[in-house]
Image 1 (cartoon, helix red, strand yellow):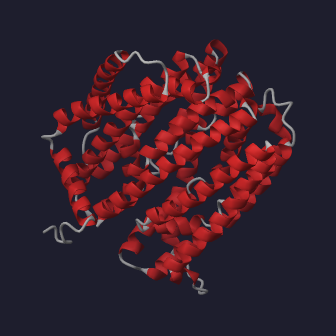
Image 2 (cartoon, rainbow, N blue to C red):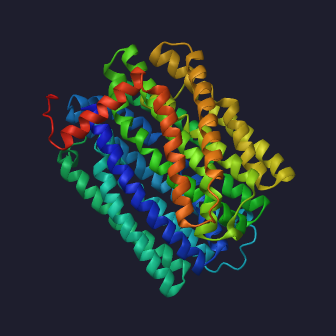
Length: 513
């Protein structure tokens, strides 16, 4: 059942992300043609600023969702109701605090926006972003319940439908009115309808959570949740400083137009990440169940399977980005939106080394390991901000991203050490050895792929992008299949996916016959 739910979650979310990605690229092209890079920079910067204010929420969702796994597994409805009620109260408080912080931050907004004097109604745009942020808390408790129950694919299909509607509406509004404010108003209006509809769907599936009876969890468990929330708050502050401050730094040290140019790269990499991350989002709830019920050896074996998938997809993703990122920008929106080669290389490397940690962080989070390394993200954040500011003065925009690289490398060992010690009871050198092997294989497969693509001497066009994209898919896959097909991890993965496919099309029964 775990495997079936995981694969179903993964497939639905990946299909959704492909559709959303295509619409996103069309929407971004229309945005740039009608409003320009300066508006795009403001859009990206406000997103980062509001993400900073949302750190108030940090840890509440993850800690309570972690607490939901066991009661869902044993169908303890009273416990589920108590946790959902607690979560709802917590998020109401978060919404009020974020709203007050948003008003408090507003007078200082100009400090972070360099070169935006020509943007009208900036204040109104800011508060539209604030409103969307507040709406996101309406159903947080309900969405987390369905995700913890391994039914995230239900929400994904709803999100896909609304995102398609939103994107089409925004494209039409931009073409007709060329108004940034109407663009934002259409987005927040549909987002509100989406939140209300999702709330209705979850309540219908879990009707018992509408109980009027006030239930509570025991004080010991409540203290445990509060401890996790405090630790996760530090984690998320560090995580934001590590990954969420790029636009603010670029705007402050380089300019708002550079934020707009970088945001195109961030969008492409973000869309690719959204396409790849469902693999780990999809197995997340299953991992929580696995950790709660299985032996250390079983947990470790499944982790090795997840780590192999992790390496495989992010390796190919990085190779595709290295070969196609700048050519795609040229074909999509033009050469004037290109970043320099060094900056692009650093951005791709950061994508790869961050992505390669997905499996270990999935096990760490679902294993409830939050407190033991609560200060590491703050250390990483300090390293990132310090080195990024210093290198930005010396190298410009590439220095900001190089600072992120330095901070990731400095602290990446802590999470695997905790997971290997506490969940698997294994030494960390096993992880480091596998990590280095995977890094070497990525470089090797990337070298072969790049050399092969260089033989294709076509001008930049949609056809040349497809040809090189196929090469970047085929060569690494062939290399990795030849290397791994005899391993137990590959056999397990192949067997699990094969059985799911056969059952899906009624070619075997539920017992595998």
